[in-house]
Each structure stands twice: as structure tokens, then as C-alpha cells.
Length: 557
Image 1 (cartoon, helix red, strand yellow):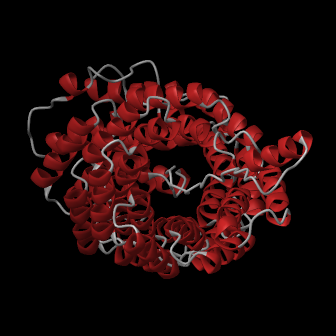
Image 2: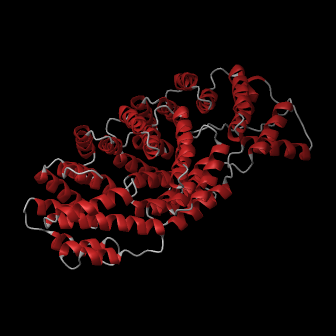
Image 3: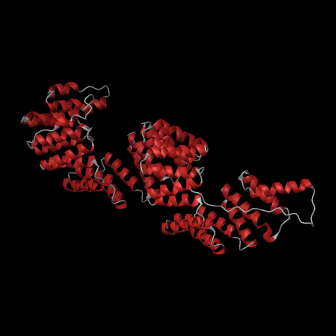
């Protein structure tokens, strides 16, 4: 969050020798003045509006003398969110005193909040023309330029505000926000730190610095800053929401949900907090709760494309693919440049068997974000399913170029190289996948198969060391280590969940087929590959691989 810099003007209570009033009347009017000035923010906006209205209607001042009351009542309407009335009061203040720089600045802030950035900038220009030393107006104009996406002018204005007032914590905070938006996180952190140095009780600056650390994935520092922000302002809903995000990324889902709960308690209209709590519930596998939260986020903000996208993910996780696609459709309709929604709809369409439509969606995602590694990887998978291996390999290559740590892309490309008899290339890709994720047993198994086919000494003894040998697919690894036979591997398939048991049986048949094929037992390998091709879920890699192996062996499923 940022500070803006509303200018509040003092009203002066002057007693002249020509006007006398009873002490109680003087006290009452002084109370109204104090309420209208509201210098210590001790009056709520409604009370300040009432006090300013009483001052305006008192007939004790007229003309330029009453300008301050209209300005301050405009500020109170601004704080209340009633921008129309705020602007009307600023208009009247400017009519009464056209040289009143503070009111131009304040009216500019109101126009900016309304989204009328050019009118806002015009007003800030007028404020600066009347007072070239007015640091607050430079800061405010910087906020308006930033809202327009004109960061160069925003930086120039924040810099000028800081030059005019080196103690101006708000300007440092706002320049930090601009650096954050430009992904220049180190400069952002430096500015937030300066804001905190100048104002150690500046909760927003702590929150914003926490956001910068969050974006750097320095979660410990982010959490420390969010804690500080909340300690300074226990009613700060955004800080609770942001701390919840940090806990969620850290895998502490219950603590994240507790923070989202508090954010929603403080602000029941906080759509973002509902959306984020939904993400946490979804990460816990509580899809119905996640969907309920996304529903609330959409109810509060009907144009919330991210909430539609996230609800689509939850529906898809529940197997309700058509409802997922409908949500992705809505997310794209609301934000036609939402690359993630196209990618996710592609995955859903692929799950529905609409592979060509999926390819089109992945292509749209790539068109919007040419560096989108996941979309390249997913389109590669779709091309692989379609049998267009050359195009798949090209897409996996792009995925790896944009994300050199994509173990899945190396693994998928390695399998295609193996199907195409480029065994050395397959080994290289499987080896790289294993280096990126040494705890993935399947990467180790496929590397072993590729090495044995090329008569290269097996490295499975070494690659098996980081693996969890107490859980599936440990029995498959033991088969290739020589500690089990295909028969004992099949006997090791045992899970109370029928779907998990089916998957284990699928893998046992496929890897047993690969194992006996390496022993030149072709007929037994064909039998086992056919079992895998007929019994494996089609979403399993082993189903696709079994069919590829049967084709390579000149057989049919």
C-alpha cells in the first residue's frame, strides 16, 4: 500500500474587537473548528464532515476565508470514499481561492482514485505551478504517472519530492512501490528501508518491504516485516493477507488460513483474501472449501479473473472438467491477455481428449507470453500424444531454454529420444532430470533403461541412494537392482485404494516388460507391454510408453 499525501489545512479561530460571543458559543465553534481541521485524525470522516458543514454554515467566514473548510470537508469525503462530493468541495474551494495549491493537489488525488489520470495530472501540475516547492504535489503526481504506467516520469517526480523534502517518508515508500512494479527489488527494499528509517512506525512501509522480500522468496525477512506491520497496526487487513501468502508458500497452510481468516474478519469485503484462502484450502486438498472461497471472491468482485481461473483449477482437481473449462472461459473473457488461463484451459481440454483445441490454447498462452516454459512443455506433451514427436521435441527444447531447471521437460524429451533410438541423447536428458530432482525414482529408472540399452554401465546403485526405498515405486527399483523378480514385483503390488493399486499394477507390468526385454525375452516383454497398454490409465506415462514399445517391436497392442 502507498501513502498519497492529502493536504489538510488549518482553520484559524480569530476573535476581533468587533464581535463578542458567550464563552459557551466560543467553545462550541472552537470544537467545530477542531473537528473540521482534524489534525490528529481523531475524528471519523462523518464527524469531520459534520464539523466542517457547521463551520461553513456558521456565516462567521466568507469568500477566501472559508476555503479551508471546503478543502477539509473534501478530504473527509475522500477518506469516506465519496469522491463525487469530495470533488464538489474541492471545486468550491478552488472557486473561492484559485491560488490555493493544496486543493488542486487534493482534487487531483480524487480524480486519480476515480481512474481519471489525465485530469489528476493536470491538477497536480496546477498545484506545482502555484507552489514549485510543494513536495506533496510532486509525490501525488508521481502516483498518477505510475498508475498510467509512465514509470520514468513517476521516478522523476518521486525524486523531486525527496529532493525538496529529504525527510518525506511517503515519497520513499511510493518510489519503492514503483521499483517493485519494475521488478527492481533491491532498489525497492532500499527505499522502503529509508521510509522506515524516517518513520519507524510506518506500517505500510514494513508491509511493502515484506512484499519485496516475498517476491525475492526471502520468506523469513518477509514474515518479519509483516509481523512488524501487524504489530504497529493490528487492524491492517492487507498485512494479514500478505503474511498468509508467505506462510502458504512456505507450506504452512493452517497458519496461512488463520491469517486469511483475520484479514476477512477485519474486512469482510476483501475479495483477494477469499481468493487466497481458497488457494490454501486447495493446496490442502480441501476442494469444496476452496470453491466456496472462490465463490465469495467472485460474489464480491464479479470481474475477478484470477478467482475464476483458480475455481477452474479446483473443479478440475475434483474431476469436474466441464465446469473447469467454463471457469477458464470466463477468466479469458474477463482478461483476454491472461496467459495462465489459456494454459489451464489447454490442460482441461487435453484431459477431455480435445488435443487439437489444447494445442491452440497452449499456442495462445505462448503468444501472450513467449517465455512461458510451462506452456511450451504442455504443448510438447500434446504434440507427443498426437504422435508429432519432432514438434514435441522442439517445444521441450523451448521449455528448457526458458526454464533450465524444468526436470519434467528433460524427462519428457528423453523419452521421445529413447522411442526414436537416440539413446545417447535420452541418457543425457534423463541424467539432467535426475540431477535436478535426485529424489524422483522414475528419472533414475528411465536412465537405467537407457544406459542398459546402450550397453553403458548402470548408475542405478548411485542414483538410488537418495530415493525413498520404503514407498512405491521402490519395488520397481529393486527389480532393476537385481533384488526382486518380475513375479515378486507383481506380488508387491498392494494398496487398499483401487485407483492406486491399478496404477501400481500398470507400472509393474510396464517396467517388468522393460526388464525382461533387456534379457532378450521378447515374447514375455510383448505380453507384459500388451497388459500395460490395455490396463494402464491413459493418463499414465506407462500407457503411452507401452504402446510406443509395441510399435517399435512391430507388434500391436
